[in-house]
Image (cartoon, rainbow, N blue to C red; front, side, top):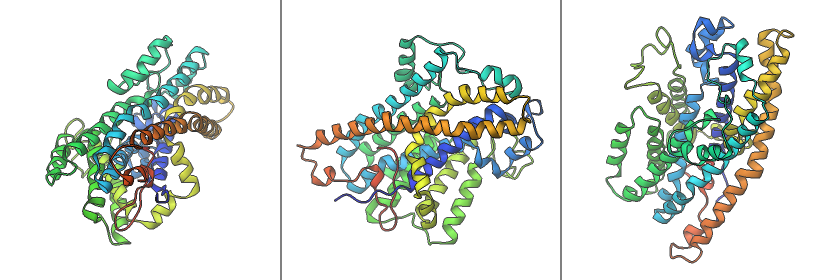
Length: 410
């Protein structure tokens, strides 16, 4: 019997995807929110808000760090529950395809924008003062697009034609890191030495999130005990607030701000990625121990955002550089700058959600369904046992002893 699907980690990932969408809208229309330079500023607030914890609302890098911690947690969860290497092998074999097909479809959307000459970002930034490079300057051949999508995006940190795809190499290699550690040391009593080595080796890298997520998964499920259980009330709230504070470390200009006391190095260790990843891990611990938080993120709207999270992440940039920039240009001179941004964003978001919903229904769900059937077919006659075949998916895992968790990494 499978367990009921619990969606609060999906909801958390959905919230992170919304932060990424908002971040890119502000990066185009209010670039000083990320650069803190008077030359690109439009208002007084767009230079001081980014240096406060309010930047959590648009700190896309923190959201990405949260993605990676969640992936490390969810991808390792079933192994720590059932202790069967066959689970890891099956997940490893399908991981690239799970990520690649939706990512390539997002490039096809970008290809349509370029071929139909629907890119208005370069025109809009004459007014917005955005410094982000135009991703759609030159349309590739179709073969080049496919090469970019299937190869460079996942094996070379490529992000041509869709800037959000820079995370896909980290996501793929981070997944392989998790699976490799599970296969090599998942049953070893010395695996915590490997965690310590990984934490140090990736201390200022995005791969740190995968190691931290895996460690939290092990601590919450290993030996039938939840070793990260906190007494309800003060401690989950304290962990959550500290995590949000560390996650809101600003992009620039932390000197003289509430973050000035942190030992923060622009290039070395500890850097902003270290703090944001640590903050993401603390937020996850807090949520795993907070029933009100779980109820919030498992609510119907957040569950829906969680389902669409990957699609939202992939499609919004094409809408931003085409429809949103065109609408902004049409409203320029008719509305004040601030009102123009507000109207453009509010009108654009339904289109973003509509495209994300279509991608979820037409691409994401069929890919997950096909890979699931392949997985079950592969084990239908094996000796891995009835427990594995009937085990819940990653989105149906249960926190040992106390809570349950889910995630979209199916």
